[in-house]
Length: 147
Image (spheres, rainbow, N blue to C red):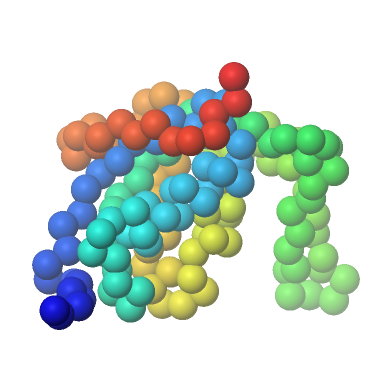
């Protein structure tokens, strides 16, 4: 019996539509990361990009559990002396909720050239409207929705 190894020529990519309404950020990000890497497919091969395209809508309705909304901070450094910047997630969720989801998903992808290629297939939108209607994405219901 031979082991199947996928190659880039034989990979068929699909488009999926994910509604982030009432989804915890971490659960949403981990499931989207699995779709981007192709781990939800039977042909998954670690060194080949077998992932699909994912469109996430309603990013402004994603949920941060516990006290994360008030206590969690996003930090980065500008490269200059004393250039450490930070902003709270309450501010980020109000202004750039799509960037919050992109950052969470990017942190769950491999830190290699393969991961950088996979994150380009993620499209996140604040509202219910998206620009990928021509691709006819398949709606997917994810586990972990908070009622």
